[in-house]
Image 1 (cartoon, helix red, strand yellow):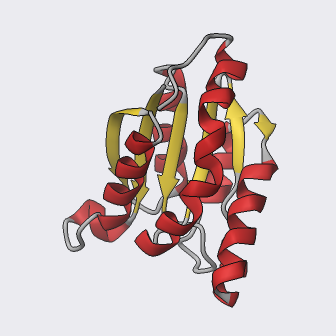
Image 2 (cartoon, rainbow, N blue to C red):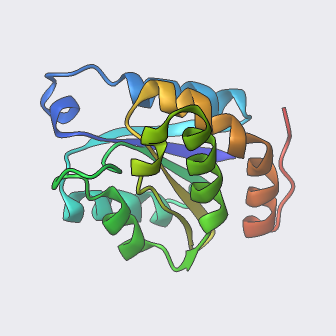
Length: 159
């Protein structure tokens, strides 16, 4: 399974903040059996996010995980950019992640992350908080090999 991790953050893109969320997401993806072939940082800008997502889909990575830009501030536009790229919704991923977040904190309801399929690539939005990523990634990790097999029609080594 080939995966891309995209950190959506203007402050990380400017170098004024460390990318702890992207690090956590890449580590967890690797532990789930994915080979993280791309790590990138994109500013909080819908056209830039959309372009970065389209590049990964065109490169035929199996999974694209984004972190950041899923909250309520005016510059949180990751879900909108993702919706512009996906061809089919896969709402169960975001619903399960939100349910797990809400179980741990009432603030979990604030996440607007989405998930969907573009060509044969699954795209999932994660919050920009490393703790939230640690809590929610295990919810979808067991499904990833099956997702890749289903979308790509090929067998995947499971860890």
